[in-house]
Image (cartoon, rainbow, N blue to C red; front, side, top):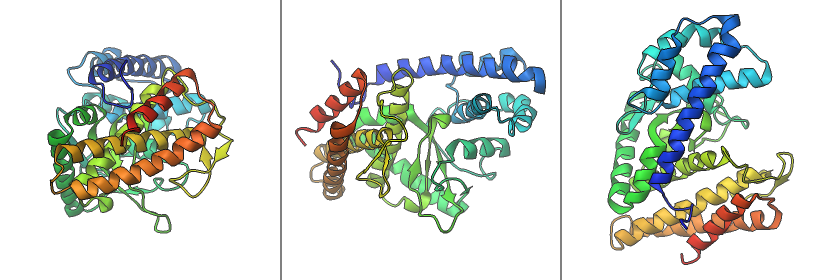
Length: 330
């Protein structure tokens, strides 16, 4: 049986296709049956199907962000954003909204993206602790420098950990560069949300080295992988109001967040180990060794909390045991 902590490209592609079908079904229902009777819609239903389900490319992160806004409105009965959404729909589906063939790095702002897409992605990446609620586009020079390091990071993974690189290209083909506009908040390094599936956000001012950036990409993509697991299984049954101490944050956090941190840390340790073993005398080997140890410490601290207090589904137990087995020899 395949250990789910390791990359499994065939399974991942199957899951991506299931998500594509669910995205089309849900968006079709929300646009044409739930909201269009009140707000009207000019876009043709068949065009939406063509982009989401029948198109030659996979729907991009902006399609998921659009869905997130509509779903939130349906769940909360807060229609604040709906007039703008329905005003943009016709143009939205006539622009290229598919995933790029390769990796595309963009500043999260009007310089690189359509203003409607910027707005949707900013809404998607908003968090509940204030780190990403006021996102701004970095300078053109800073974006270019970060894009160069990100390209090096993908090349490094292709060379040293090709299975991990293949998974990363399925989970993160769109990289958005942004920084927080709130000066009294600590800087965030990156973010991943299901409402921007297929896209990751990175802070270019935390990007300096290809090996560290490769691990940052794996970190955020591993959250995306876990979001896919959550579609059919809650994994963690602890309620959101029950909080526990976590090795990666000062404030207590819900068990789901600790489980995510444990999972991500295990995968970072594994990919750093694979990269170091591929070139044990290489330029990056010493720092990769440090990252293995740091990630293992974070994993073990998180796993101890999960084992002591986690209420897991059967599949959650499978994931926990898989992380134990995979990290045992490191």
